[in-house]
Image (tube, rainbow, N blue to C red; front, side, top):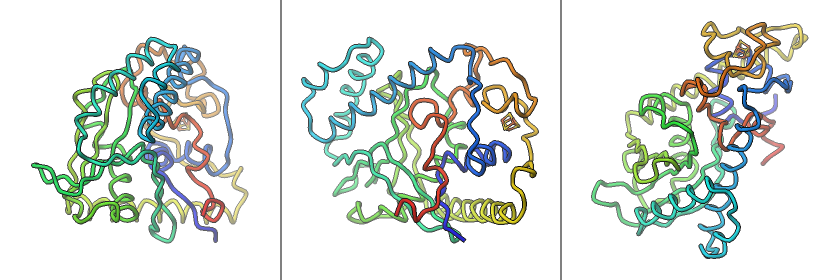
Length: 289
Ligand code: SF4
């Protein structure tokens, strides 16, 4: 059986709705329904989010600010860019490594994470932090700390980093790592999630069980006509309001108003950067490694 590569996004989909996971990753069905009643506005924001990620990446690679600033033509992107430049001095004297993709074996499969940036310190700072996992967010609304903590990203990223990237730290363990969600609209106040030994043990056990459960379900599905089988639909129909499969599932045809989008849907993982289909979210690992 091929090894499957899981990501925070694909696992999050499974946890929210098994049917969505099946449609998106197992069957690979694309569905054209817009996620909001303002798809053009949403697409523009996603495009700008990607632009910001590209600018930050190039900046961290050493391209001068002046050159990068000349490329900016949209006021929102300019605002975010200046917000980033105002924030970056807070990371000194850490070494900031841009856009790193790591993966680690887990429950016979692989778990991957694509980090926007990782900042590492040769010596711990006053709070004992040796590594900061950075994630750039361009959300409309700042989500709550509780919402962020509950996301699979907050569990997958530290686990993958500690298992596959801890060599980037000179020493230290889970309690020396923080995950920072940086918000372009709230640049000087990132949400800082300190990790711990206890959280690491809990998260590894949880993710192993989750990955094993999905792998088992996929293996079972492979022995039957997968298009005939319908994996369980979520019982929480609020999750359907912005789901592109809602017409297929008979959970609504009309897109929900963007202005009423609640955090947990509007700020779905994919919104600014890992939008919609994440083809690498679930693939045969040998295709990538
Ligand atoms: S519309 Fe609802 S039930 Fe159907 S895939 Fe999406 S979240 Fe799941």
